[in-house]
Every structure is written in structure tokens, then in C-alpha cells.
Image (cartoon, rainbow, N blue to C red; front, side, top):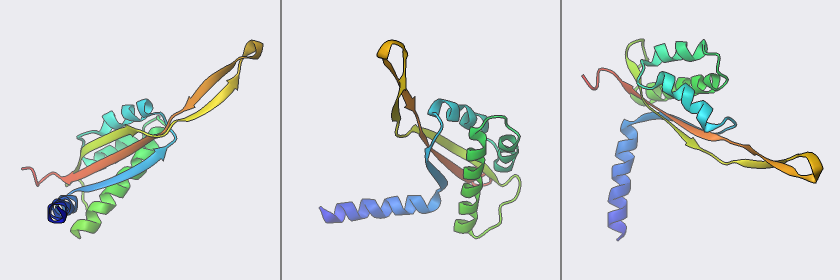
Length: 133
């Protein structure tokens, strides 16, 4: 039983070595708003996506921009190369729902309304463009 788990864990480690990603947990923005930003850069060349995020009006774009810079730095650290324009692309970006904080807001006639403060988790995967060609 232990041998099976060890071999599957070793396979997972090998897959993890070949993938370049960055993850940002518990971002205090609703997942719906973050997905709008994620859809803007999905599949785009990495440095072009940085420009799009930098000049976007959306508040969530600044957080995704930091995360993309981190993913590029992780790629550079794992491969030992310097990233250049036209070399990397955003292969996947995933937005998952995080914890929801529930608060009460006073309402008329002694009632209370529930306020849900949502959060999300974002994962960006970066890959080289030449690898697929």
C-alpha cells in the first residue's frame, strides 16, 4: 500500500517540477469580479498581459498583475533563464471561491440584512510558447 502511494507522489512531484505557477489565496474580492479580469488575460502572451493588467480600470487587475509577475519569477527560478517578450504565455488562470465572511447590517423595524463578504483564490499557470510549437 505504501509503495503505491509513494510512486504516485513521485509522479506528482515530477509533474509539479514541469509546471510553472503562482497562487494567491484569500483575496478580498468577489470571484465574479476576479473572473472578469482573468478572462481578459487567459491565453495571452505574458508581457502583453502585464500591460493589459497595468492599464485596466478594475481593482482586481492590480492583484492579478502582482500574481503574474510572481509566476514569471517562478518560471525564471525553475528554468534558470531570463524571461523575454514573446517567450512566455498565460497557459491557464483559475479563480476559485474562497471563504465568505458573514456580517449583519441593521434594517428597518428591528430586522437585519445579511452581508456576505466574499473572497477568492487565484492560480496562474505560465508556460513557454516555444514548447508547444
